[in-house]
Image 1: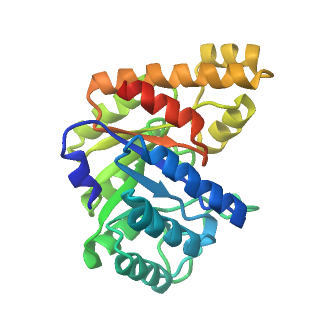
Image 2: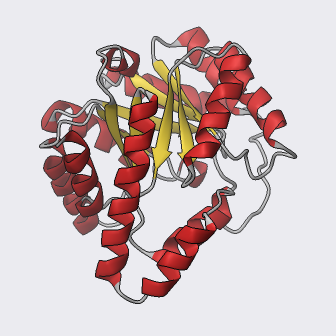
Amino acid sequence: MRITEIIKRGDPVFSLEFFPPKTPEEMTQLYATLRDLNTLHPGYISVTYGAGGGTRDKTIEIVTKAKHEIGLESMAHLTCVANSRQQIKDTLDELVRSGIDNVAALRGDPPKGTTQFAPHQDGFQYASELTAFIRKSYPLCIAVAGYPEGHIESPNKETDWNHLEEKVRVGADFIITQLFFDNRYFFLFEKRMREKGVSIPIIPGIMPITNYQQIVRFTKVCGASIPQQLVRDLEAIQHDPNAVQAYGTEYAVRQCRELMDHGVPGLHFYTLNRSKATHEIIRRLKG
């Protein structure tokens, strides 16, 4: 089923993002996590593609098994990094053959050990080009990424948001945002996109805080900010894992409730392949 059809049902859609594990043991654990979270009836899951498409086969395996064996609607990520047009076409063909209806069209991060994105000589340089290619040739529902605080490589937010407007113009069906911890950034971002004529669903991306140092690393990489009060609170308890997780869960619940009161069509959780915090947050939101 297309994710836009799930969104049209009206209730806020909870979605969960995972990455392909490296070992068979971790893969077994991931499927156990998916079955656990399936008891909460999420709208769909998404599975990342890995730098340079290094996890292509695992991504396809996970979304296929999640949909057809576990019963979770699934979306596969697809990136421009290190992929030729033919490689991207081959991946899309296999996803369609596997019965997958949804794909996230992304430029992707530079491969590990590099700092700048370099397109394949026969590939795509921008996510907008990948989006247009998919829209022209495949009957897939397409998600694209949005950045409430602007992309880390963009000179300013308005320039980045103009690029997002272009992705929508060439065929995106809905937007999932990068993580953020201050809802004011999302509200301004959404307002500006609506002013630009973007009418497709915009779904906030939420990352539950379970480890202080980890969240500091993540925000540095993606360009998101952490409110100063949140930093002070976490610094005071950072050496107590249980306290950090409890605080992070409570913070996410408050953040999500405010977003839901605002009327967002859904919430997309970056799970980091863990279920405990996300399970508790969704349970409380639904409760």
